[in-house]
Structure formats: C-alpha cells, structure tokens
Length: 202
Image (cartoon, rainbow, N blue to C red; front, side, top):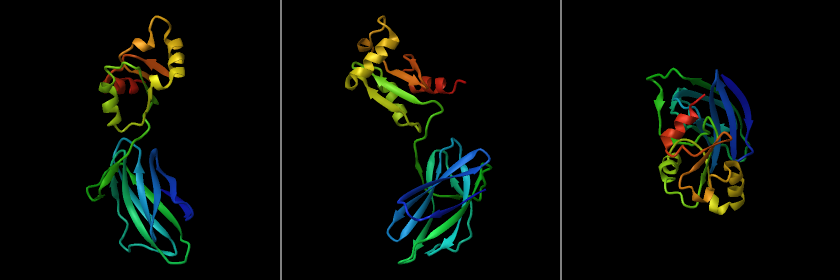
C-alpha cells in the first residue's frame, strides 16, 4: 500500500505506487471543473488496482472502491472528481495493487502505451536499406520505445559508426539495419523476432 498527499497545481502530475516489486503510476489530467485520474501499468503483466481518494474541496462518487483491471502496458481511467467552484482542492490517495487477478475486478476500456524495453534500442537505417521494414515496422507496432536514426540525415554519426565497423564493412553499402542494443552493435538482428530473442538473453 502506498499513500501520498497531492496538491493541485500542475496540469499533469505523476506519482508512483508500489506493492512488492509491482509498479503502478497514477497520473492526473485536468478537464474543465474536473480532474481525471488514470493508472499506468508499465509491467508486462496484468494487475488489479484499487484507488481510494480522500480530501477536501471536491466531490466524487460515493460508490465503494473496488479493484479495476489494468492490463499490461496500458492506461486505465480510475476516477474523476468534480471541483468546487472558487476553491483549491487537496487530496490524498491509497493505492492497492494485486497481481493475483480476481474475477470480480472491474474491466474497463484501456489504452495501450509504450514502455522502455529491458535493453535500450536504437536502430540505424543506412541509405539503401532494403531489409529494414522487416524490423522497423513490427518494432513500431510493438509495446517498446526505441530510437530510429536515418544515417543519411546524420552523416557525422555514420562516420562514427564507420570507425566502429572498420574499413572492411562500408556503412553506405549495407542494406540491413544496424541495431545498437544497450551499447552493443548488431547487423544480424534483421527481424523483430531476432531482436526480441537477443533482448531476452541474460
């Protein structure tokens, strides 16, 4: 259980909630005369989350709090409060997170989000890259954040990579993507499956 006092003052607020090693972020978004609360699940497993809010100078539903399912790598609306006119609200919340999923948990509409991969990913695209789509397209559609750099737009970076590869492998002759995975360069990760296999290696 995690409890933190918050005061209204920012358009966008983010706080972390923890139970054991499971992490849920609560964000707030301002809408006219209201504040909406969302749970962000950056884990790769579904979690049940109970969000209990208390405070002054706002109104909220009197319904009893219950667990809400927050799927893996998703954002789910938890609660919206109505602000009292002319008064500044203050509030605190209690957050309970359970990885033992219950059939009684409320299932709401969720929005998929991007998360950081276990290892940072940067994909360099040579000028004549005929096989890049087999990696870049599924990676763009995946849950992972990554950096994409076109080398024809960054000649100074291409020069640095050329030094790393040596004269035996001219960068401008490559037709495959170059992947920087946690600081190590690869030219054999030409598909998404191969990339994920390498990411998951210890």
